[in-house]
Image 1: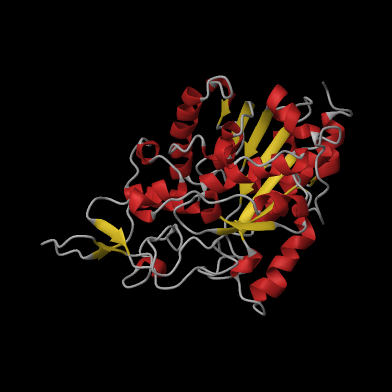
Image 2: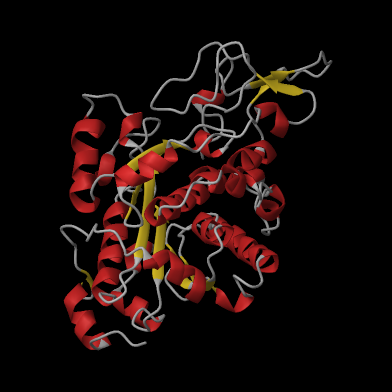
Length: 390
């Protein structure tokens, strides 16, 4: 089905001097409930800028959505190399939902700043198919652990380009509006009264509305990550109501550690807004975080993220940061896939991993979104049925 209007008309509406116009605000109204049924029955185009480890793609496949076309962007050559290996691995695992012919990793410029409406037209944005855009835009300038430059920072300023991309797709697809998910650090991670909490995030919300926030640990991750999600797939109050019933499975950090190592003793119980995974005196269930920077403060001795020997050893190393294998397992990814990319050492791979979205968190997000919109009971068993690392 061809959308109304012509590419030339749409191009003029969303372009100015060869670049996307800067929108004041995207349309935050939720998509129709039929979006979920149509996504399953007809399939979707998944557009994932700042694509990292293809978490948005796996989110759809894990929830039974056929992906007819997967459009990926990431400025990092390392991320692109890993994404290629991951896409073909996912195609082998989900051949009916994601045939190899759907993999389109080079149809768009790698840099989100270079995207134009014409690019979207060229890859079929006017063909009438359902689209969903999933973007975890860079958090380095918004994180409490970063420089807190806000949207003036060279990383997180990509927010404006992500918003422009959503807005352009909404102009191009008025008959079947695209779904979108934008992800970043939650404003709740910042203390009240700080510039980030009181100025920067309210400015973000002027463009994209109010987010929902939850901790990846609630989704079963082996590490805390408090994230905000802005999306038109759900109504926030309905989402929060269903999300409150999503129980974390019983998992412990020791499950993913190399033999001979253990996490530190839990000396304080987790507090809101983080999910209460760790309880004083009980085995650790979630590491404090996973970051792109190696040897970050959270993982230095004697911080809670550092690991210690579980048995006496003659080895000099008594304490260390979680290694790449352990971090990948914590976030739900296959380290085999990470290492299948050519000529990338563990340091580069750890950075790609640290900048990615938590796999379990985004998969739970979509499952809860669908359940909340369709009035379905959330099934813990269904969500946890396929807990393989991928």
